[in-house]
Length: 230
Ligand SMILES: C[S@@+](CC[C@H](N)C(=O)[O-])C[C@H]1O[C@@H](n2cnc3c(N)ncnc32)[C@H](O)[C@@H]1O
Image 1 (tube, rainbow, N blue to C red):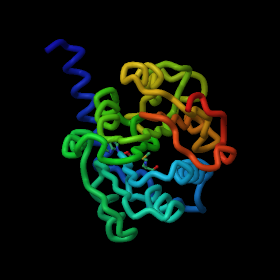
Image 2: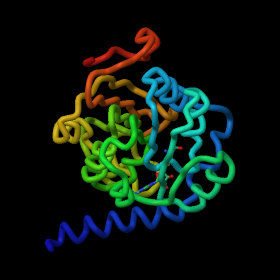
Image 3: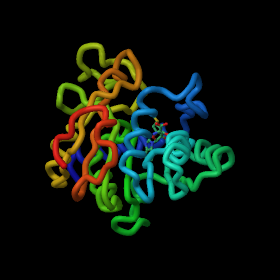
Image 4: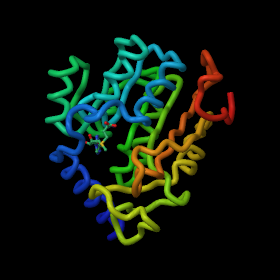
């Protein structure tokens, strides 16, 4: 094993240790549903998936919103943080499991109609293998709401951060999702700015929707943004 590989493995293990034990989210949305969550849940509703899976769901607040807005019962998620999952199961009554990206192996191909992440891949140092697994278990759509900084990749909380993107949670990274999509032959159908907050890295989040076949969507005019492909 090279020194670089050893340090990548250590970085990944340290990131997991941090997120496994960190109460980062609080329990609901606090002061009402934020714009980004409202937008994601509205787009999911327009896509009318038969089932939805969130990787890195924390307590499941996004899934709860989606289930209510889309009147969908087939929603499920996993997260590495046991306390958050326990709260989500008890409070929302959702089908949630404790697990990291390795747990995705348990799901068959195309298990879920739509698979999504919100600010989770940015806490995984190298998300290519995770994206490959998410692509495998997604039947029709993959939706990512993650920070894209200067089209590059690096640590958000480290010395490589640029401009005002400097202070955020430890073990936070930005990745070149367009390169990952190309490697996985994924077609981006929608790509819009979707700030999660109005400061620092929150400003750089984008919603990237990929379709594995043709896009089937009601009320296209309700979409916030222009379709890149159909
Ligand atoms: C910023 S929070 C976002 C939570 C949720 N997606 C939301 O929007 O409310 C990041 C979440 O990713 C989870 N996480 C971090 N690394 C993970 C991993 N390797 N596998 C699964 N979950 C992970 C954390 O426990 C945390 O709940």
